[in-house]
Length: 122
Figure 1 (tube, rainbow, N blue to C red):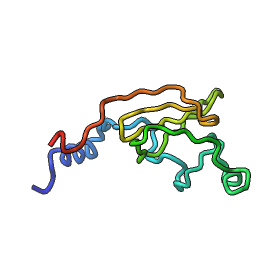
Figure 2 (spheres, rainbow, N blue to C red; figure 1 turned 90 degrees about the vertical axis):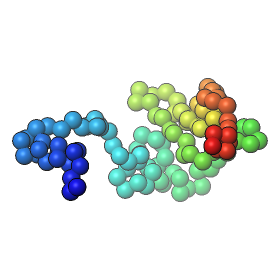
Figure 3 (cartoon, rainbow, N blue to C red; figure 1 turned 135 degrees about the vertical axis):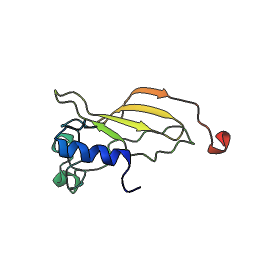
Figure 4 (cartoon, one colour; figure 1 turned 60 degrees about the vertical axis):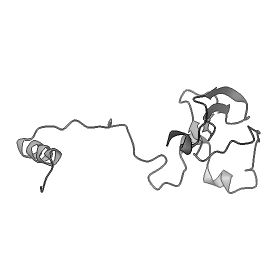
């Protein structure tokens, strides 16, 4: 079979000039930073000139549970109307934490499910 049903539907929509429903909004982006993926966005207070200077360093360190590991990148939220930048962390022990990005103060903590091993579910 050369085309699937979806392929025929797309071809028919193209020839008949029928708009296809988009799965993303016009404001959605597939990147999580600037187009070059440098990781720098001007609203996150992470100017490369500051990061490369001696002013930049570790601001805080918070110990969590001994068995927790963090494989995912923290999500940084910068409100448009001002207010504190927030960090969202997710651990291997299924804890989601919200922290103040500047001070490291814990704002909210929630365990979304008790941790389990892959072997527990087969």
